[in-house]
Image (cartoon, rainbow, N blue to C red; front, top):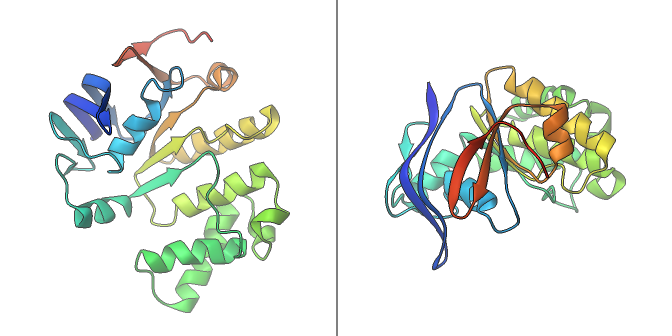
Length: 225
């Protein structure tokens, strides 16, 4: 089943064309790497997939939702079906780990104190962070913060997870732990699309890789820095 489909899509950052005539299909359960130089279009592609960049031509479908000239209301609805992970974690510094996740739950329509608390415990257990539930982001290491960000991305049991440089601020060992966790999540039927500069990670955890270069995307067999 195709979870993501692009046909003849042009992607712009404001007025600048960054990717041209892109054709790409991503299936359920795939783990996809996006590589390329800074400014080559990796992050722009991810932003197009979650509606932060509006595509005006071609065909772009995510989870059966067309993103061509999509309305803000439909973007919000789509994002509830996606998990999005950022390089800088984007945790709320004035809230505990538990309250960071609770904030997202309430914002996406969760109700019932007991239901929410049980779900938070389950999510934190999945990322081995249950014992950190009452701590604040500043009390956590970078790897621990990214684990919380992953738990937050899983709140609504998304079929697609978009990760923009999730190991960019982490040391090599912690990066491996985070990627191992993402592969475990992918193994449960989730589709993951990850932009990265970390070629060591790709070589240690090989999977389908696409390179953004000169406004194009092409599948590559061997990844070299």
